[in-house]
Length: 232
Image 1 (cartoon, rainbow, N blue to C red):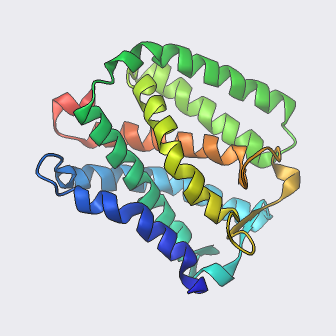
Image 2 (tube, rainbow, N blue to C red):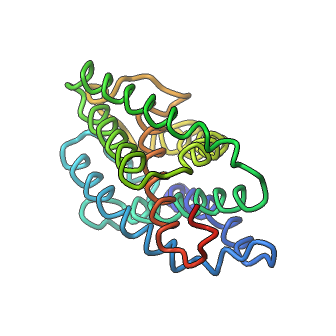
């Protein structure tokens, strides 16, 4: 069973959301095309980043927990990660936004964006010698500047609130990937390239990395949707 661990994590992450996508009150299946386009575009730079960091030894994988197949030096499970995780996250955002009034969170969008940008800039200035920390902060700041200034996104507050809820799933999923409950981590990190501040076994950078991945998927998902009411 060990070689299927990472594959099972991906499967368990997506399966319930996928099944409920066809529920008559949700019908997320109608938005599969929009999601696939969004996920593919967002996954491309993140996978290139992944390949680069793996080659540099910033992180590496314990292949005992994978089926052994690789593409560009990454386990196939890692490629699936950038479909399964975004799918569950965007599905959750879609459902919460559909069934609950989250407009109250929109008024916090500007404050959240600029506060996060400021924190990211400070992180880059003080920890520029740690490549995962630095690049994650730079990517997050750039994404938020784009969303706040260029697209004038009003939904950053809503997305940030949903991401806090998603953390309830992020911690156990990413916790297993980084070693919680396992003999050794599936994904290992070079301690010299991170802050070594962890949520259980999860590097703090992963939560920021996940936030950026989530925001960009939501942004492009909205862009590709056909229903005007879903674009606000």
